[in-house]
Image 1 (cartoon, rainbow, N blue to C red):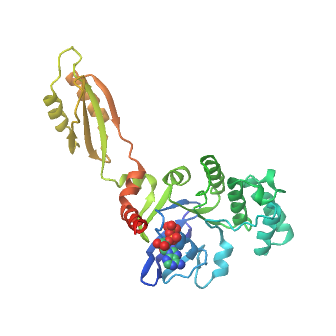
Image 2: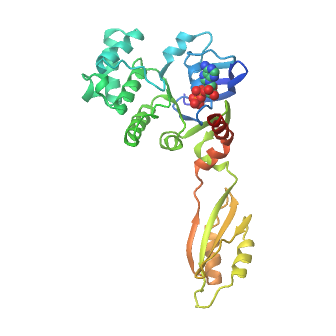
Image 3: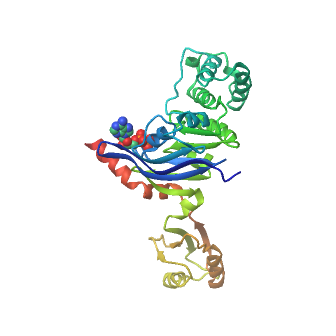
Length: 332
Ligand code: ADP
């Protein structure tokens, strides 16, 4: 049942006095999805996740995890999910194996289930080499994988991971996301981060939150497409194919006349070549038309590039208010 709803929130709200940290957030996550829960610091990601994991009570709205209500069935919710908070609650003086045993005891797993599950989590989190080591001796990367292993020990269908990579170096991050992708093949994962490249590496879908609200929710390609226009840049040599000078006025008017072009800009040129930036709606790709036009006019095309739409630009537009607010707070 690929369409089974594993996480559902409806108008979820959390206020601290007059401050609303989570403001009527509604979203759904289906079985088998790895969803990036994305937003700048302070957007409300941790608060939402702590409500979903029954560590915090909402002040309004509803949330269901694996069909179970976070208000009325906390036990059912906790059995359905594994949670890795921002700082994994590791006991540094335990060995990895002792810690996994400890996590299994908390979950009340019997000895034979623990044996089976331990074998599985050690394999999927790549811990075989460090099983007997004290956690204090492990690198951050390994520690987070131990955190992931404890979240998986009771074989939950859902994983909720709160900025699990924020303390990792780039290599450790990449490695962690690789493990996560493999684990996500059979589980539903909600992964919070303020780092877009992580979402691009591990998730097909993102929910972007800003100041407690959902500002975008969908496939990364759709979110990318939300930004207004895309720019195509061309550079035409000052001499055409037969060796005579080309007229800038003529180039500009031919470009202006192209179907789908909303604006043509001509940055200053060096006299050897002329550059133009053409703005179009997202769904228009001018490259073939530009090539044909150049051939027809005898222009020598030195460059033809359609800017790939950066998710970062969309993210910045959607969450600009947050950044400003954060700056104001840190300046105060
Ligand atoms: P994120 O995880 O996106 O960085 P959080 O959910 O941690 O954001 O925080 C959202 C907002 O709620 C922040 O502005 C934070 O300062 C505020 N907040 C979190 N916990 C409390 C609390 N216990 N009391 C008051 N404000 C809080």
